[in-house]
Image (cartoon, rainbow, N blue to C red; front, top):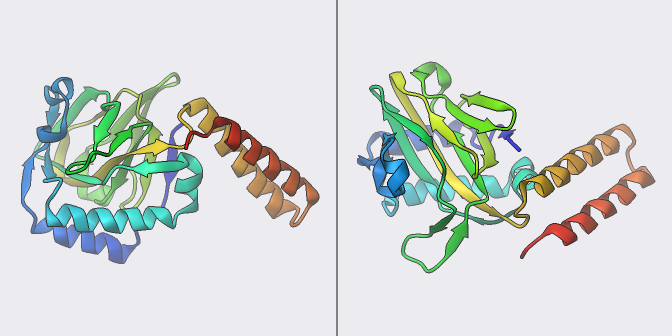
Length: 226
C-alpha cells in the first residue's frame, strides 16, 4: 500500500528545517547503506548523531504523532529516528531494497522495517529530476511531492531515486515498525477505517458506525503484534 500523507510539516517548520540543513555539514550517504545499496547510492546525508539531525528528527516525530492519517496508514509501534539526505549535480540512488532490520545508533533497540517513508523538504519547482520511483505489482509509481508532504510504502518494495539534474533535493527518510506486520492486513484496516470515516460524515452518529468500528478493532486485535 502506497499512501500520500500531506501537510506533515507547515511552512514555519519547513523554513526551520531548511535553515538548519543549509548550515549543516554533509557526509557521504553510503555510510547508512548496506553492501548492495552502497554500490548504487550517490548522495549526501546529515550524520545520524549530529545535533542538527537530532533536532530535525525530534521535530518530525512530534509532527507524526499529531497526524491521524500517518497513524491510520502505518499503525506505528516504533519509528526509526529520521535521517536526512541531499541530492544535486546528477546524484541519484539506483534500484535497491531497504534493510529488513535497523539498529538505532547508540542503543540496543532494533526496528523491523515494515514501512519506508520519505518526507519531501524541497519544493518540487526547486529541482529537476529526483523522483522517488516505487515498484509494486501494478508497475512503477513516480513520486515527487510538495514540501511538507510524505509518502509511505512497504519497505519490501524495490525503489530508486532518479538523478537530480538541476537544483537541490532535500528530504527526510525513515522506517516504521508497524503493530501490523503484513501489508495486506494493514491495507484492509486502512480501507475499513477510511470507509468508517465516510459513513460517519454522511450519517453522523449512526449506529452502523459503532458496529463497523467494533469490526475494525476486532480485526486489529487479531492482526496486531505488540
